[in-house]
Length: 242
Length: 378
Image 1: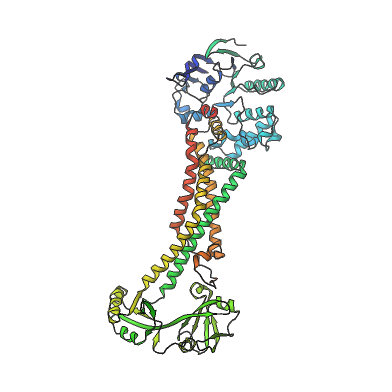
Image 2: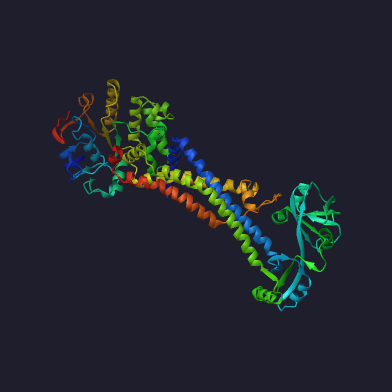
């Protein structure tokens, strides 16, 4: 379980242009379920996701990982909880690399290198044998039916293919939590439904999935377990296990 | 240990793939970098080898050469000076030397003529340098006619060609007997060009030199160390002149490399953000940039040094020979003995590879230390 306790994120603190993106948010995110953060642009969904994913630190508040196998078992307390907000940067890297897999709105693939290399990218600094993670990457590409594009450069792929590459990359280190930020923003309806099918498979595989989206195809999908409605950096409503 | 090695190999692997993305830009940078290293390393190799060559040759030179001056100009030395100098305590041997220059109208070159009765025992025979043999198209057993000051041809039979290894000093050399020397130049008997003095104890050289100067006020004793110093200074000066000529190219390269290495484009900043967001740490990103710098600069350095080695020691430095060897109609076509000054190479390494690699890493530092989402949005 991921616990967010009174999380606030402010930008330009102490300056006239101070802006609070996330305002005192508390939330429990259940493991092995699909949680969707819903809300209009500027509601704080992406900021909240980046803090859950250890990409940014909250201005105040704490985030705990309860009972989730992380890269840092030595840092967990006896109950298996890990408070991630106060960890030094080097520990956050390890958690980002092993515990979370990220799917970005713009896919954020690296141009000029092959599909296979993009998928393997998160595994390069782990020190794992190249042959091992290459095998895994090829399996993932096959799983998402893009194995034939393995040697191609990413800029030659279509939007749907790009997203499947991004999903494969998010899974290369076998994370327990998948974070997706507006994953269907650049997809047509057909591809959006296909994406949700993949999410369903990941859920079946036991992954915890957190998605930020204002696309009804995503938040109205039957496989969504928890819907968190956000506006102006705060949670308007949350709950309803389906 | 294995994990660390794998991490380096994996990141290096990605570095190479990453560099190939900007093939044109990186290849042009590598080419210019390589050219600069090649020029500088050639210069270092050439000057070092020449200085060493000169030092080796001068090892056999006499401890001191005594010349005679008339009105500040070098003049012939009476051989009776030799007898007086030999009697100075500490002097072991004094040998009057006969040498001079001969202008060959056929090919417009100047030859150095030396008389040596120990090497050339037969009259009207000669040992010649390989450059003369080449330019006059003669070989052992052929006749080499030289026109004497009396305008009479002196027919010298070539007894041997001096070995190519001694080309630096002997390419334009003709060794003949002293009798032929006197005939050729109408050289007065009882005179020598200069005197070669050998002493028992090298520490007494300056004392003996001052005694000679006292004994013969018109003499000028020149110590071997002074000759060596002059050679070193001449080659250093020529090397320095060449560096000045190269400096404009060097400065252009530094500006170009600095601009390339320090500038971090928006795309590169975004890529760093992506890498960080998918789990790369700051040291991982800096390691990537380090390898990028190392791959470019070390490849340029190693290739440049290897090419310079071949250029200087196998091809006899055609690009620098005219500037560094001196001025002559017949250049010696000698092959320098390979000599590598580790210190100078290390200096070259630290002045090229290290600054470039550092300049590559530093601008990434800020992007790599920012929160991944900040880097990604910038």
